[in-house]
Length: 360
Ligand code: F6P
Image (spheres, rainbow, N blue to C red):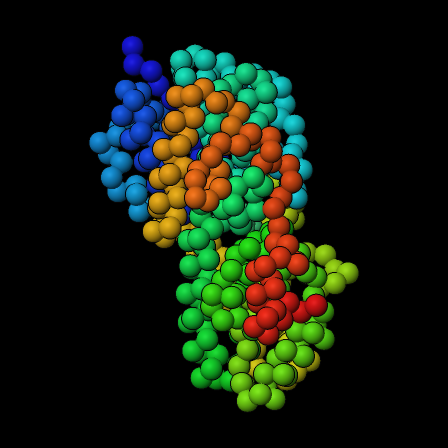
């Protein structure tokens, strides 16, 4: 009987999930292994078992197709994330049931593709004896132990394109445009897109802001004869001494939904400067569509390395990018603490050198 491995995608979706699935299935088939894909994240591992066989001959279009053909979930019986890198314990009977199903299916290994929450679940399964290999995903790029997660570059490309478009309309109308992007606890998308898209003010969770400083930048530009301003705000950005702006309360198995900071910032800028101000919430556009060529390559490298780690039986490890190579790191080193934008780091300093304000 041919050997087989399993794969699942967990947490919020992002461009590149299908690209990883394709790479894993193709590389596994080259070794003579079959691959099955569990449906709807970790839920598919539980009774009633839900999975499908993945045929390497049908993987071609997955290279550039957004989303995940396996479905995903960031809530449910496995919900492991309680916020800011803290992992909740999964009930023992859930872990036992998943382990029993992995054994029943005769899987050599289970490849778990996800961010901090999903990889925390993978770690708990590993501690219960399930042979797991992790692949780091999240548009937020906030996972430890890897220089980059896949999906991030695609999200930054989307946000940069949005800024290019907002710039021309802002310029035409002499307006302030506020672009709200994702980034719950980490402002990587806002910072990278803000610099790449020529933003004037970047607001991120790591650097709580003051409206006086934000408006000072708008007025400085007015004095310089630049009558428009681009502000990029991560959804997790907050005014000094204030909490996150949320659009939905926390539920039993999931964190509060963030959203709305862009509108709040736009309202304050208008009230304080008199400038006409508009807001654009980029939302899930950042998570949809085709991965960039950078992400296609990264996902393909991650998928191929994951299969190699299965062959080497390096269970409990995750693939990671440590340029110029992909490497294996312990999943336990990647989860439970988020990687945030260092306020004194090179990227923030680069932005400041260009005169970009962080509102502090
Ligand atoms: O973790 C990625 C992320 O994009 C966050 O930035 C955002 O808060 C969250 O997902 C939103 O997820 P959803 O809308 O799927 O609940």
